[in-house]
Image (cartoon, rainbow, N blue to C red; front, side, top):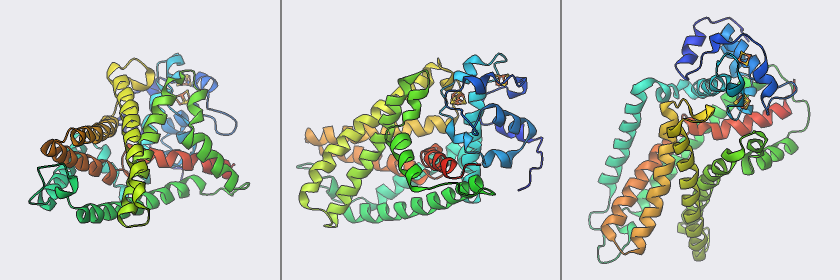
Length: 359
Ligand code: SF4
Ligand code: SF4
């Protein structure tokens, strides 16, 4: 691997965050205070050195990037106000851009242009819903599938699922190759995989190691909110294709409702934090952070609103909310392998690889 020094690197990273890492005088306070830095995988000072030297390939091959949960404790304690936590976050944005096939993720992290791309995708989804809606929906009672046909939902869902699966898999392989290059597995892989899934994904225990433990619950809300909605969709989809019995619609509905509430709680919490800008981790927000959280909030909101209109027997309101909900879901999912969403895949896989490929 070439370790060529790249002096322009710091300027590139500065566009992805608001930190002043040139102020760092390498005291090591940040690494000493970081509750998640330990043993061979010490950070953030190591990452600061790589950044100042422009060692971009070293950064992309460092699992430490994903071991940081951006609690901001290092930034609060830095005597030079260099914001090392902000740098770690900016480096993760840089990694998401670079791990993507053909650097497609670049399109979603580049200034205002990327916002237009999101608007364009929204228009594509809106046109899709408009042209593929059913011409004569039922209005004497609420019947969402008389407005958007089940066939259209199935075809669009399968196409979207295939797209996400392909790009997510390729991007993960690129990331895994970067992190494991030149290293050899040093132990079993199954036990660390299960431990990572249980501790880091399902329970997100690392948040509990930070001094400010309040973020753990809303972050769990985001994870479980999305996961429950996903499971509910699979159940409903499977039931449509007769893989599951008819009663599977009932747990699907309950899980969908619970998922919507969790998603609203998690996304609402983090949006409020970003608006208030009181904590180190919320002082700077890249537009990709706003878009990700807003999409999650609006998806949870429109999903619940649709159920409410359905309950109140309001066909028009239900159908319009259904259409908006579908457009938002499309926006979130089509960009998932390239947006902030991707961190939910990269982080656990990097944590797992860092256990299997110890130096
Ligand atoms: S970022 Fe701050 S705390 Fe960390 S090494 Fe530099 S000066 Fe010290
Ligand atoms: S933000 Fe928190 S987890 Fe990340 S490097 Fe700083 S102290 Fe460690």
